[in-house]
Each structure stands twice: as C-alpha cells, then as structure tokens.
Image 1 (cartoon, each protein chain N blue to C red):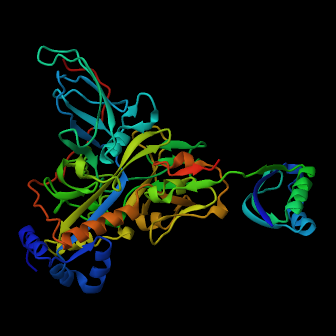
Image 2: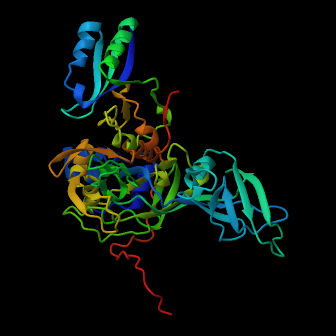
Length: 388
Length: 135
C-alpha cells in the first residue's frame, strides 16, 4: 500500500466517506482484517485521554478600563494570576491556590467557572503610570465580556506515566492520589491503549500544528511539552516504559465545555485540572496503523515507591496496563488492588465524539508543520554557585 | 421490620464469644456482615446490617452492650452525585470495603451502598467533590 496523504484523507472527510475507528475499536479491526487490508480501508484512528494535568492554564485579556490600568498584580476570585505581561493580560495557572480559601479553590476552579460562564471577581493593583494612571481595580469579568481567553497548557498528554505505591507505614497524599501504607494500593493514570502518544510512539503523526480536541473545542499542538523525554526506555514495539513524550497544547477557552475540563483537588497535595484531549491519527501507511493497534497488554510501566522523598524513586516492579486495569497486580508476592486516576470512560466519550465529528465532516485533520523532537536530554536542577 | 447498620468493637477477651450466633438464635435477627476484622488476642471489629423487629433489635443491642461490645450506629450515609462524577476512580483507591469499584466494561464508577461502612475516606479523596455525607 502506498502513502495516504492528509489532503486525501481530508477529501474523504469532506465527502463524508472517511472510515474512522477509535484506538480501542481498531484493535479488533486489525485482528480481524490484518494490517494490510485494514490500512487500505481505515483513514483515521481517534485517541483520547481525560486525566489530571497540573501543567495547564489560560491567558486572558480583560480589555481596558477607563481610566486605564497597567495591572501588576492580579487576582481572580482571590486566586493570584500572573500579571507580568502587558497591561491587561494575565495567565491563570491551574495549580495556584486561593489566598482566602486555600486548597479548596484554585486556578483550575477559576478556569472551570470561566468556561461555565460564571462571573469571576477581578482585583488588580498597579503602581500607576502617566499613561495608565489607575492604581486599583475591583470588578467582575466573564468569558463574554473579556477579549481573548485561550488555554495554553505547557505540559499535557503524557506519553505513558508511572504507577505509584507506598511502602511506608503511613498514608501519603500525592499527585498520584492517596497511597495507603505498606503497599495496600497502586494507582495509575493513563487511558492506555486509547492514549494519544501511546498510539504514535515515534511522533510520526502528532507534531506542532496538529489539530486536536481540547476540552470540547478544537485546538492545536503548540510545541513539545515541558519535560518532553523521548529518550525514555522503550519496548520492542517502540512504546516507552514510563513517563516520556509530552505536548504543549493551545485552544479557545470560550468554546470549551465543563464536561471536558474539570477542576480537581488532590487532598493534601493541591489543585489540578482534569483536561480532556482527543487526537485523531491519520492512517498514512501500514506502520502507522500498526502503532495505533497497540493493546494494554503491550504497554508497560514501572510501579514506583512514592514514599521515598527523592528524585530517584525506586521501581518495585514492571506491569502492563492490562494487569493494572484488571483490578489488582502482584507486588512482592502480594495481591495489591489497583485504582485509576484518569477517566477511561471520559476518554472513550471523547474518542467517540471526535470520531463522529470526523465522520460528519466537522473535524478536518491538520498536517503538522514541525516534528516533535525524537531525542533530547532531560536536565535536572542542581544546587550550585553561579558562574559570574 | 427495620434495618440498622452498626459497627461493633470487641476487646480481645470477648473476641472468642459467638456473639452473632446469639443475635440470630436468641433475638431472631438477620445479620449481614459487611466488614470483619477479627483475630485472636486482638481488638475485633465487625460492621453489619442487622434486620429484625424493632424491639428485638433493641434487646439484641442491649445484650451486646452487656457483653462489653462497643457499639456505634451508622446514622449517616454516603451520597454520590453521579451526574457530576467524571469516573476517574480515585475513590476506589481508598475504599476499604470495595463498596466503590470500577465496572471493568464501562469503566463507570459503581457504588454498592450495602458494602459501605461510611468511613468517609472517599469524601476526603474525591478530587471533584461529588461524594458527601448525609446529615
């Protein structure tokens, strides 16, 4: 079979003839028809994830007041936003905590409330300039009365991730949820065989400029995500074993839907944002289809001991997502219950929705304009003296 | 007929007594054990639904108290606001009785109220606050 271009696939989408499956459905299609035949017939495979992604936030432009203000410090519902950009621009980060309510409300909640169309209290301070004399403003904004509101998430959509447990004698509260003492549970967070970058292990399809489903709107891959680590150990099928590639994504917050963006609080850890992302993968050729047919039993990760307060946490064992999803894993000869933190049900809903949008011609694929790096070194932060 | 949910704590010296036998035999009560943590020379704990005539339940509880059992009635229950739930599964990581589990086909959260011992761990763990306690 020859190479199928994005333009050819888009023509089929426009004429309502595109053949689309989700990354779960494609497993059975390939098993039944074989790679060769299926690659001829299938045009697009949709992937999705819905999980807690801390590295998320939104740029907002409030419009100018009269007299105008050059906002230096900005709060939204008492949550500090970053105002160190132009006069009425700010970035609200998902994990920032409320100064009055602490961990029960944070930047993620501001984002969810904005999407829901609620009024948000804006308070800002300035030192005042000749051109921007106002020193203080206290008002309410919502998504219809501000200018741009776009989500820009520096790191989403992790290509695989760790599974977590706790060998200590006390319960610990982590970004991987509540981990019970003495390895009494294991948590994991991925949609596995449905997850975008696990279906495109070498970033052949997904790159800068790829059109995606982001929180209910159409958005784009903006860049490699922070801590993008394509050099992670990989299995024979190319799938990384543990945290590896990441995506920075962008999309119009005003068009998002709270069904696909939800604020979350992880007890004694902090606030984060559940982000729903769907990425269609064009079936260029047989190799691409083969990658999208990956199964949970072929995707592995390491169970890490989160009770060790160190960067290099020890791995206690390697398991497949088929094992993790079965409800328990064997750890040092003991049967340990497992729990997901990322919603597979929601990921399926998104993959299905994107599939339907493509079949109806509402979602066209975009050719990536630049590739994601396939190699780079992840630096660590060391305590050192400056050079100058 | 009435059903109550009760937690019973036994000191090590009475853990060997067949207390549930007496509840069933002497007071005609139906005892559905939901959670048990019992061992020789240890403090034991049972959580059970007890069904029977109201007067018999009263008498049965009085009997248990006389035997030195520390009794606590569950007057509250866990409320799951299903429509707001994202089915992430974080609560299933801490639920001690498997009252909260993931359905392996639909990956929906399922809540079996019968198994719930109202420990409230899910309320504290739920990232989006759809679990709460009735008052």
